[in-house]
Length: 52
Image 1 (cartoon, rainbow, N blue to C red):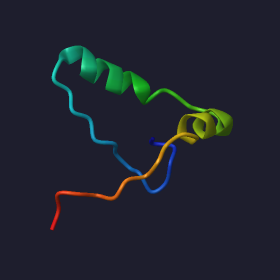
Image 2 (cartoon, helix red, strand yellow):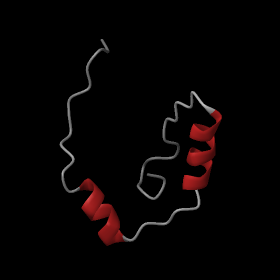
Image 3 (cartoon, rainbow, N blue to C red):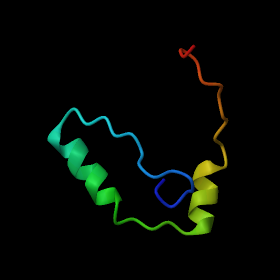
Image 4 (cartoon, one colour):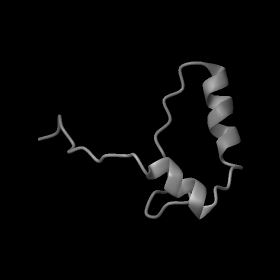
């Protein structure tokens, strides 16, 4: 996600120490454009709800 603009900080909800370890380790990942395309291929955006 950090490779995508304008995202500057994804929201991380760690409830266990290993969740935080995984999130920090993800900072060193660099995905190719093809890998990003494959991950986003099936994503369907949804309207934001719960905010007025």
